[in-house]
Length: 604
Image (cartoon, rainbow, N blue to C red):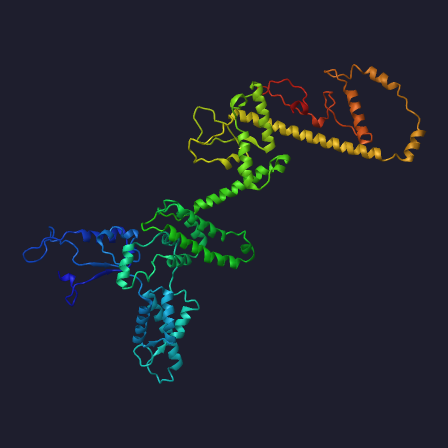
């Protein structure tokens, strides 16, 4: 076929560079079709016999060279079974340096200082020939421009540089391009996927032996390419040590490495735990010297990655994950649990709070599980497992358990509240189910959904109707506690006032005035009371006026002075202050009770 030959009569060679970035559905599929096409039979004249209509069949006549950076790219998977693979390793630094020196001599350029800038250039580019040539090209252009400005008039217009007679030294411009550290000549930044894959992946022994044979050096003199040095460089080029540590923690249990005694797994997590200490912001170094803290992270976290490589690397392609969302969710859940524990501790009774110590760990491990067992339904006659709507239905043993349950709720500062069942629990033609939960929800701290073995003992839960009664009982107990506290405070205040009044002697003027005033006549008061004795009685037969006077006199004696300010009392004649009367509005159809005055003592 004449179309397969060039002008000189030689066959053409097809080279496709950067083929790993090609489209797998169009270009790679077309190459696979050409490779798999059968060679058509030849005729007597030597030409191939094509299809009907004169159209010739396209088939593979000579090898095609494909160049790529990653042979395991998804786009190259269809063509890998038909291709012979050659792994090209970076050249020897000394050999590359000599080749660059020859290129400079051909371009009439020179480098002084014994070739030290060229060695730095090779190290900075990682042995990339193309990157070295590009760097020398820019450095030579800058050096030639400076040489023309400096010595053009002195040489009388003699040609300089390429094709000329004078040599140009590019040492200064090349050192300026390399900088102090030599970094920046090539973008060595890697992503998280390649970094984690480098840690957990090691090269097969066959490829190692093949490379060592081609180089002609003994295998003991050259370390493995996927060894510690490569892992340290990959982590350093990635730059995010915290992200690297999180990804290693997520993938240690996902890699299938040989570890029958789990010794490697234990040592790997010990390394990760030790490296995680350097991320803590609570250490003295982190709070006092942030620069030293970052330096410790830079040196120690890559060492943990190298240890994980030595312990857990495999030859096969591991199933890795690069998302740290589960760790973030666990961090937020931990903060929510800590706030829940603080709410629980703040809601404890003063006596119970005084006995709780040791921090949140002791509360979660000892106090909360024991308290939840006390709040379970129980067994036997004292069990609160019946869904009843009134306390009167309970037996004597159940009433004792009910009182103990309410006392435990008040001691722990807990109660039951109604929760929304949600759309999942909704059923047509049925009333919505009412569920009650603890508030605060401390049962979440000791709940493990993944435990499904037959040896675990579960607490018996209290029915929702019984929880509603317990919540009401806890509310009534809280009201009684508040009233008793108020009464105790008022009694303490009155006792202090009486004590102060008895200790203070009366003034002399008041005693003299009391002696001079004549005694008042009190003979008419009993007659008045007798006349109105039948009227002063209320419907219960209680003499409200006399009770009121006696109550006022007792209060005046306690405080030490006479109360002249009138207090509005209830209209029913019971003698109760109007501000303390609780009124119930009667609505027909809703309440069918008899309206009567009610006091706070009747409720609590």
